[in-house]
Image (cartoon, rainbow, N blue to C red; front, top):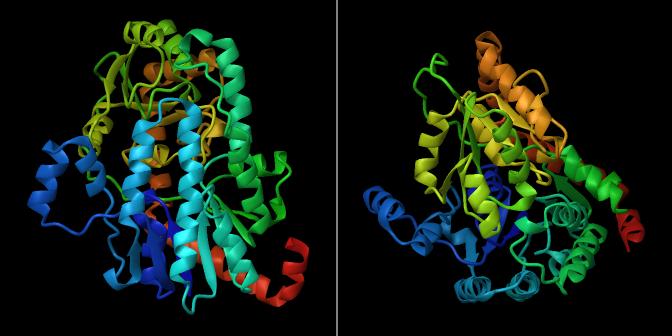
Length: 417
């Protein structure tokens, strides 16, 4: 039996729901979650309610028996207000560190019952992983993103190359502590689950125990049937979904849009987190929609012909899975950690390469047969990466690694300690 300790509603509580369906969930610990509501009320609130209400309503642990859920609502509210009040990168990181430690403290105090394993997430599981190992339990950490130290290395270069895009140049005094916490979690885990090979190689690059890493790609619910697509319209419609911040590569999207003026139309749906200068020059070539409610994102996928994610650092961007499920050829980078295969469902281009982005978009704009083939391949690929298939891969990985761990027995703990 497994205890899952999860801050937030990552992937809509997919992991504890998968474990509950398989009869392996002992308990879900989380910070704050919403109760099931009648669908008409939920639909109205999701469409018309204030942003905090909409976010709260997205935290419904569907498929998990209520008697298996323990939530720390007061802590969740305090965490929310700490994030809202954070006016510097350091204050935000300090809030993450506080939440991870406080969450683990509360979980340990409640107790783990008869569980034999714990499942945690990076930056929010250190003390619980250490507690589990002291009790002889199997300790699992999911690394949901590339290591913080990898992210920081990439960000430092971007800020040097594009200083006018930076919102704040104030240094984060807590970032080293965050990176160190992640490394200590790797040391305390018997199994580190990675959403992509990019994440696994990032752990290797930072000296982590790559031999304990297992790659398990994610999955998403298939999108509803879309209208038939027709590329006879011009220009080609290119969509990006996600926050507009430097590490998502909007600076390279902009340069590609400039090169393809008149040949492609660019639209970005997501929170704007770049300087006023960057917003101004972006808006001259790209339609910046800002935050789009989750319920409305499907319409953006329906509008698009091609999906673009010019990101520099992810874990395994679920938005790419969603784009595939809509039949969109995807252009992205190796650092997206996607399941897109170069030349099959789209194109994989190097990071920081606007010319490559522009070239691939132009190919699709000029070759309707290539677009149609990649669109069909996208749908076929998406069928391999549904939430159901993700559950099968996850349970297979857990069974195998737990079995291997039991065969090694106490020797494993001697090595880890």
